[in-house]
Length: 208
Ligand SMILES: C[S@@+](CC[C@H](N)C(=O)[O-])C[C@H]1O[C@@H](n2cnc3c(N)ncnc32)[C@H](O)[C@@H]1O
Image 1 (tube, rainbow, N blue to C red):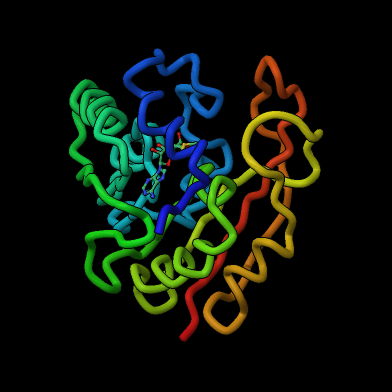
Image 2 (cartoon, rainbow, N blue to C red):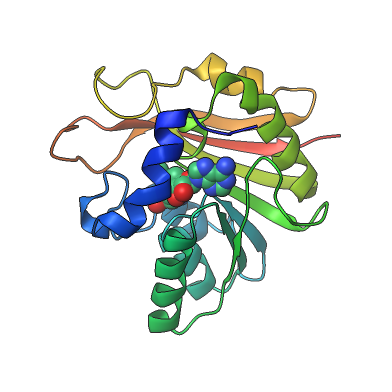
């Protein structure tokens, strides 16, 4: 099954070859600001094994590797992974980048202390969501942490991915399998078309 709608599948299949990174709405050249805080606060720690689902050009993955985590980034797009590998090389770190589908990641059960999702879930089709949550759960070790960064319904309507409600998130990463430690909005960096970027940051602990 496709994880995203056809139009997003089409977009992601070409955009990394056709456009410079700075033209991509989700590319800021900086790791996520809430991800930086989680590292600064010691929630994600040196030595942790992190799987970055839909890592794109690898900005979060390279940041985490530079902070001493063992990182595996997964993306469907070879062109995105090529850029991610180039950035890792320039930075002198060695995260592993794997071409694969987040609905069927080619990784073993329990490989991750932490799984991160930066701007992947909000593109996902409704019927793919529970498969995705199964995979996040499968990849995490017992008590492992899932960190979700996504568009929210507190943003103005308009172009781009769907706006996501808290119940979309809580019904997908549900309490039978995930303990929600935190789910709140924050103000992310503005873009030219979206000055009010109110996004979700969620922290979920694997249960079961
Ligand atoms: C909005 S981008 C976010 C990239 C990166 N996480 C970031 O924050 O810069 C979404 C990413 O999901 C990837 N993607 C789309 N469908 C996928 C799938 N089924 N499996 C793996 N990656 C996928 C796209 O290629 C794209 O790089």
